[in-house]
Image 1 (cartoon, rainbow, N blue to C red):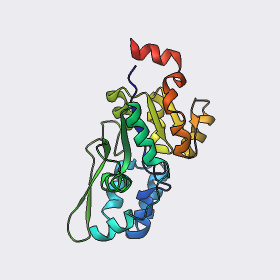
Image 2 (tube, rainbow, N blue to C red):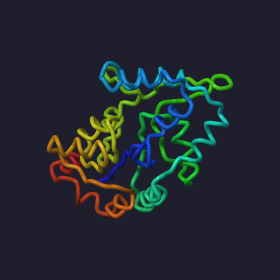
Image 3 (cartoon, helix red, strand yellow):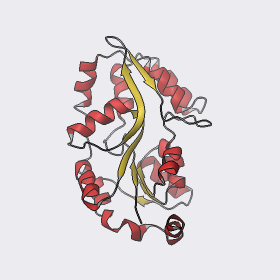
Amino acid sequence: MSLILTCDFDGTLTLKDTVDAILEAFAEPEWTEVEAEWAAGRIGSRDCLRRQTALLRVTQQELNAFIDDIAVDPDAAGFFADCGRLGLPVQVVSDGFDWVVRRVLARIGVRHTPIIANHLTAVGEDRWLLQFPHAAPQCGSGVCKCAVVKSARTVVHIGDGRSDACVADVADLVFAKGWLLEQRQQRGLPAIGFENFAEVRARLADLEALIPTPALAQRIA
């Protein structure tokens, strides 16, 4: 059976949420008020990110320099190399900024990996526009990860946060850490806990054996 992997970016491949870090460094103070609306459930992440991005005041050069200092899991590059060696297709699926994902992956030598994320565009000296090419009807997220998983027939998802919750429910196998792992455990749902990508890499060669038999049978059928 052919396996497909999807992997979150912020807080999963990186050691912290890059969107929050960028907003803290470069956005007008009002971004925290928008964040509070999202945390309270009054708006979805798409509306939240759109409004917060409009508050950014940072040049391209300043943003790129900031991105280049973002810490990445030490085994992230090795993870992608292992996937290539094992013939495991992998996509990075993020509800963050594609500008950031591309630059970080390029820095660690990861190229030609599909990136599904919100599209960040510079519009003027220090202003930015965020577009949502992967949004879906009836979904408040910028990137509807569930739709990505269903269309790609994804088997394995790796993630850590709220944007991974729904996709984890439709994936056949979940690697989880942080908030996502706690949420899966509270709901009594299966997940393989991990702290770093060294642990994920150790499992890659045996992924098919980790997937529940009914899920495998359904995929093969």
